[in-house]
Image: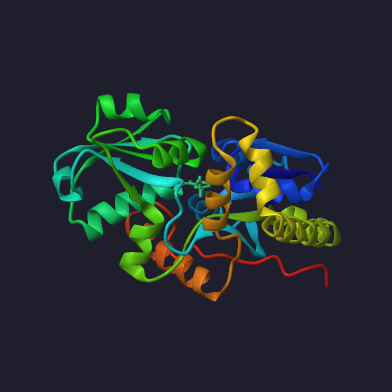
Length: 269
Ligand SMILES: C=C(O[C@@H]1C=C(C(=O)O)C=C[C@H]1O)C(=O)O
C-alpha cells in the first residue's frame, strides 16, 4: 500500500509513528488528486473532497484530523467584527476546501453576512491586500495564529463551529478508493492498523513529535506541543454527528451532492 499524508504539522503525530515507512506527502489539494488518480492508496483527504467523491471512496474508521473546539490551524482573519464583512470580500486560501466552505457557511448562516468569495494562493498578506478577510489552513494559519499581526482578529473555525453546533469539526478523514478496498482488503486492513497504531504512538510521544517538528524552525517545541495536543485524531459518534451536520449544510450550499455521507471500510472479512 502506498501511504500518503499532508506536509502540514497536522499529520506530524501519524508520520512520527510511521517511523521509517515511506510516505508520499503533499498539500491537501495534491493528496486528494493523488488518491483519486490512484497514485497513493491510503491517504488523508479534506472532508469536502471526500463528500464530493463519496461514491469512489471509503473512509477508514477511528482516525481523522479534527478538533472539539479550538483547532489553531483553520482560521478566518478579519480586520473587525464578523458583521462588518456584509457586502465585503473574503479570500479563500487555495489549499483549503473544508475550512473555506465552513467559513462561508458560518458567515452566511450564523453571522448573516453576504460577502463575495474568491480563491487565492494561501499567503495572508497578499490575500488581505484585495479582501476584507481571509481563510487560511495548515502551518501558515498556525504561524499567523500564534503570532498574530497587529490589527487583525483571528477567528478559530473549530471554536466557531462548536459554539454554533456543540459538535466537533472533522476537517479531513483518511480514505481508500473503493476499487482498491475491493481488490486488496487485507492490505487495506493492515495499512489501517498501521496508521491507527502510528497515531496512537505519536500521541503518546507528543513531546518527541513536537521536538522533531520544531526542528523545521517555524515553531518552538512548546508551540508544537500545544498544537498537537489541541488536534483530535479520533473519529467517534460525536465526530460523525458533526460530519453529517456539516454535510447537510454543505449540500444546501450546493457544495457537495445531496445525501453525501461517510461509508466506512469494513475490514478484510
Ligand atoms: C486541521 C487542518 O485540517 C485540514 C483542512 C483542510 C481543508 O480545509 O480543506 C484539508 C486538510 C487538513 O489539512 C489544517 O489544515 O490545519
